[in-house]
Length: 539
Image: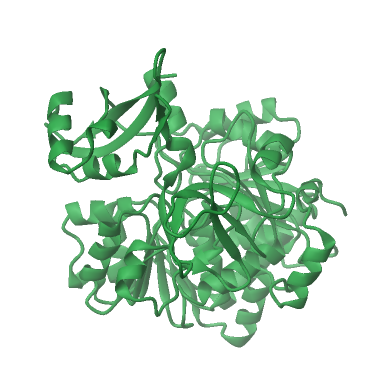
């Protein structure tokens, strides 16, 4: 059966053949790995939850039961099923079960509600949606009715948890289905997952990875993150986000265990690491810094860690050093990737301390990376420019968005990541921010990252962001937005005096100060600046 999402899988035939011949693209799938582990290591832990552990034998059975339940409900190979679930063992069952019967899981962040969900489900022509019921302040019955009314393709809402609303299908019913044959199983060339770039809505950038690209990237990632089958991996970012999903599937590829934490808090994160004796930690800078504020990074919690990988958002060297120093038996590394290209650049496990703190590594084996100027020409080592990549983990186009594809993908396969970076003479890549975050003031490009990092370190500040606002003479000026610590306040003059003391040039100081109760965040804990601009009326 042809899949409408296959329209996005446009890698040239010659390129695809080269990737297969080089051994990058194989017939491996995540559900296939689980089936193999169920035969070879059925009692090995796959997912460690707060109250119970699911083995690979149990996970394989649960995924096949769920797959059979979906087929019994009329789902078929090629259907899209939205998945909005936290990091819990049942996420693995759902994700793998959908893939096993040939449908495509569509990753949906937990904070999204009807307004954010509707355009994404519509763009993917989702036939089903599985989400969590029984959540406080989430009227799933109303959301379900509104979505089904607005989306003709959406036929079934599956509710996992307490009190499934009327009109929904209880997950427990599908999970109890007798295992039957899958008459039309997927191939490695089929779509494996549908995701969307952070903050997209009106014109979504829809990312479709085939099983080949997903399994290739996760196998490579596992070579550095999950090095042993007896590793226990604590991943703080959501599995519905590229960072979290890659770590989850890389853990499966290694036959290791995922330590699951349904909802994040510093205490829950530290407690999960301690209880499961996690050997690997993956998280963002925000997880590291909030843990420090809660005074949780002590040997009691970090003594079991062998490796920590910090990324998913602009990562100051301080965050990686902090985690490294807090882990008496482990090392910390900076990590980078994105939904479109997964992990084409990596630090290897033997990277020396200065580099694993300050750089995201080098291009991984058959991948390529380069830094170019606005004109597309390669820059000399040390010069800041646009990071571009090319290789076998990368998608070839966005689904249903030709304009975004033309703006981002070159005809020769190079992908403009949107990140600003420098590359040294040995190929080490140093990230320096997002190109779209640059403020162009009187023709001068100002990178806000250093100012934001300095403000985040201020004891009175919980979070900060620098945003552009229009100016009739200079084009743009810089506005600083602060979320203050309880009981604290700052004036613009105090901010400027502080930045002056931090050695930040006056040219880069903010010219306006606004306050927010909280920041709109992505699933990977990045600030959604476009939404913040809308909220503050800065456009």
